[in-house]
Image 1 (cartoon, rainbow, N blue to C red):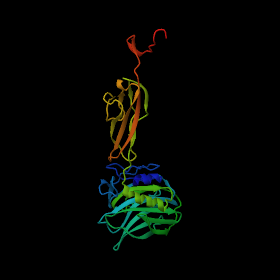
Image 2 (image 1 turned 135 degrees about the vertical axis):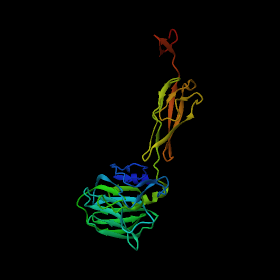
Image 3 (image 1 turned 180 degrees about the vertical axis):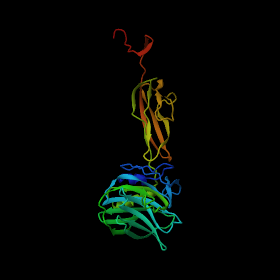
Length: 337
C-alpha cells in the first residue's frame, strides 16, 4: 500500500496532504475541512517519498489555520512528516496544533531549540512542556506521531516511542487546527517542510503508526480508477451506442483517457474518439452475431494508470423498409409460413 492509502485505511477525520500548488490545503479525510491558504511556499520538491511534494514554512508569518470537525481531546492521534530547515532559529516552533475555538486549550507538537539541541516536545493545554530526548537533525525527514489517551501523552518518531508523559486532560473537544504555526495569537512559526498531516479521532496502535512509517518507502500517489461503463448487448450491426466511460482519482485528477481495441473485427469498428471518456461506438457489419471488446485506460496527473474492459454484443442487422419516409425494421417471413 502507498503512504496515502495506508493513512486512509485508518480512517482519519482530517488528512491534508499539502501537495497543492496555490490553493488552501484540501482535506481528504472522513469529515473534510479546508484550512486557510497561509503563507507556505507550496509544491516544494525534495518530499519525504516518491510521487509527492511538500510545503515549506518560513518560520516568520502564519501557517495554515481553520475549523475542523471536533476531536475528542482525551482520545486522538496526529501524524505528520516533518523536516527542519538548517537555519532553524532558537525558539519554539509549532509543527501541528489542535485547538479549542478560542485558542485557550491547545495540544501541540513543538520543535524547541535552545543552545544545545532541537528537541521534539509535546505542549499540553496547561502550557506545560513535555520534552522528549529526541533531537531533530536538520534537513532530515521524520515521521512523527503523538497519541493522547486520557492523561497519557506519547510521541513516536519513525515508529519508535521517544516520550511517554502524564498530562492534564482538557475538559472540552478540539475544533480548530493549525499547521506550521501555533495559533492566531501565538504564532511560533515553524521553519522547514511539512507534508501529510493526519488527525484521527481515536488512539492508533503502535502497529498502525509503524505501518504508516513503513509505507513511506512505497511512495505516495493513490492510483486512479477506470470504468469503461456497462457492457452493451443487442446492438445491431451498423447501429450506434454512446459508451459511458469515466475515471476518478482520490488525490489528484485524470490527465488522459485512451481506448484500445482488444478483440473483434477492429478494421471496421468505429469509435467517434479514442481519447475521450465517453465516445460513441458504431457496430461494424462484419461483427454481426459476435462480440467486440474495447479497453479504457485512464492516467492520473502523476502518471499512474488503471484499465477496464467493455464488451459489445453485435446482432445481425434486421431487414428495413422505408414507410412514410422513415426507415423502420421489419420481420420478413417466407410466404405460407
